[in-house]
Amino acid sequence: MSYRILITGSEGLVGTALRRLLEARGLHVVGLDLLARNAEEGDVRDAERVRTAVAGCDGIVHLAAVSRVVWAERDPETCWSTNVGGLHNVVDAAMDRACPPWLVFASSREVYGQPESLPVTEDAPLRPVNVYGRSKVEGERIVGVARRNGLRAAIVRLSNVYGSTSDHADRVVPAFARAAARGDALRVEGAEHTFDFTHIDDTARGILALIEILVAGESVPPPIHLLTGQPTTLGQLAEMAVRLAGARSTVEQAPPRSFDVSHFYGSPARARALLDWTPRTAIHEGLGRLIEDFQVELGAREHTGVAL
Image 1 (cartoon, rainbow, N blue to C red):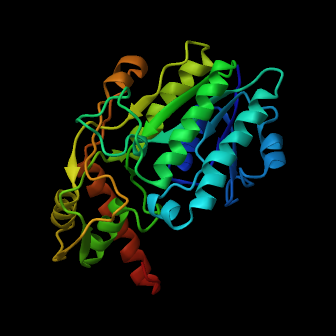
Image 2 (cartoon, rainbow, N blue to C red; image 1 turned 120 degrees about the vertical axis):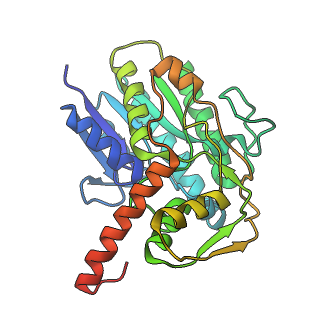
Image 3 (tube, rainbow, N blue to C red; image 1 turned 90 degrees about the vertical axis):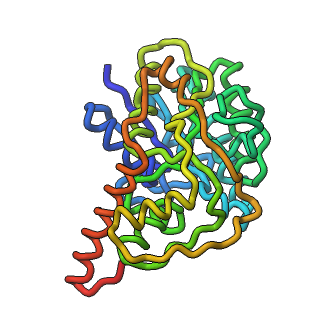
């Protein structure tokens, strides 16, 4: 059976990788994004635009969001209208169909806030400490209600996804990789802060495994982490980037941001049990490849006179 899958936020880091993976398997993918390079242009806050995009789809992967914690703190209204209002539009459009499509909702490790114990399992309490995290908790609530009303909807909780030079420049992994590739200073805001960095290829594979369950009509699993279970401090990440780049970059220490969780790494056991999924890319491998990609781009841009 041929499936038509809608990816909202299809031009982002996860959307781009997932679309490539799905299309390589012969699936028909429709993208919806504010940026219309390889997708239909549309804002998930536009209910009619969403309804049109959902029509005829067999499944939806909802990735569209204000995806940066710092952006949500700066503009909470836009975060809420996009992350919560946009999801409402997607769910409503799906539920209004005579035969509703399945839904995968991309949530975040930010839903936990500051965890009481590590590693964090999916059953840990949801206690977000910032606007972005609260928007994702509300999103999970919306999906839960829809699921109780008959929508086949699954939740994946992502954690510090990285792996592309086209990612937002202010995200910590591409920021460190780019700086190390150029020999610039690396600014570390909270060197002891600990996170679970997950490569985009692993993330896309995990979402694909979940999609395969939904396409097969199997039972919808509970919320699932897609992460490595391996903690890395920001200080370790910066030192690793400098070492892998063979750079003379300095590492500058700065205080942490007030709205950031200080320590997180999660358990991937549920994904292993239910999706037969395990991460393949360790942080030093993924970071090394990203630095090499930046170095290639830097060389190409120096040749053409364009700054990186």
